[in-house]
Length: 191
Image (cartoon, rainbow, N blue to C red; front, side, top):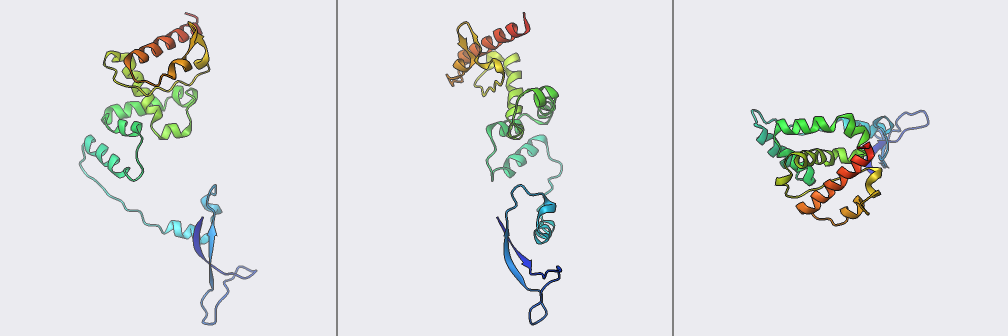
């Protein structure tokens, strides 16, 4: 609910004037949820159009400086661990991760919610996939997301959902899950 002052108008849309010739006004409220800008009262449209934004320019910044400023400006609403993580990758790797996340495989087939694109979940999945496929021996912890109809299919008498209930970041559990996923994939593609 946004409060605003509105000019009182007659049935023809003309402002009603007080005894001194000034337009009369009244306090109103508008529920802006789900409304487009064009659906807002004229007074609120003017209020939004006249709003001043503070603009700050940082010139000649290194990629580390940029990551620092992004994190600093987002301290008002805490960044998720995934969002913070991408700021520490450096510009080159962060750009590659973002490009991979924008590929149709992730966008259209990954089953991710819109919020997961914004909160860094997709970035984390890409980074952790690279980590698991190339640096498994250096694995420290995970935040894996597995979204597939095969999640509850049993392999060797156990489903991935059951493995996932252990909620641990231990390497042995991660390796067990990867082995399980490999078996599901091989069975699915007929290898």
